[in-house]
Amino acid sequence: MSIQKPPSGTRGSRPAPGAVARVMTPLMTRIHRLTGNRFGGMDLVYLTTVGARSGQTRTVPLARFDDPAGGWNVVASAGGTATHPAWYHNLVAHPDQVWAEVAGTKQRVEVTQLAGAEREQAWARVVARAPRFNSYTAKTDRELPLLRLTPSSAGD
Picture 1 (tube, rainbow, N blue to C red):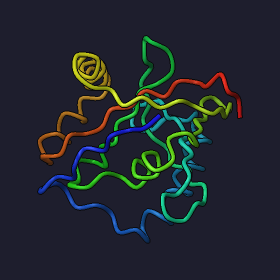
Picture 2: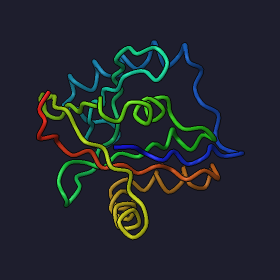
Picture 3: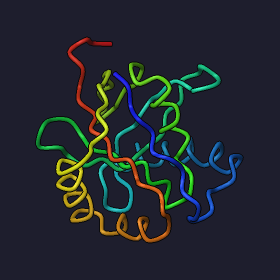
C-alpha cells in the first residue's frame, strides 16, 4: 500500500513551533482523555505513526469523522498551513505501521487516501460536522489530504 503525497503549498497559516507542539500535545492529550476524548465539539482519534526519519512511534490526537464505508476519516489540515503535518509525512513513509485508538481501543488500521468523488462526499460530511475545516482551505493553496482509517484484519 502506498500513498501519493500531494505537494506542499506556497501559502498558508504559520505552524506552531516544534517545541510548543512537543510540550502541548501530551498535555492536551491528557486533558482530552479526561474529558471524553472530545475537543472543540469533535470526537478524537489518537493516531500512532512511525517517524519518517526517527523510526520512533508518535501519537497525535486528531478530529475523527465516521466513514460510512467503515472506520474514520481524518484530515491532514494542520490548520491550513502551507506544509503537511508531521504525522502525515510519517504515515506516507510507513503506511503499514499505523494505529488508531478510539474509545480506549487501539488497533492497527489500513489507510486509504481519498480522491475524486469519494473525497468530495467525505469532505462534505467533514465540513457539515466541523465547518472550520472550510476556513483551512481558504488559508492554503495545498490540497488537504483526506484519509480513511479502517481497522485492519491483520491485527496488531
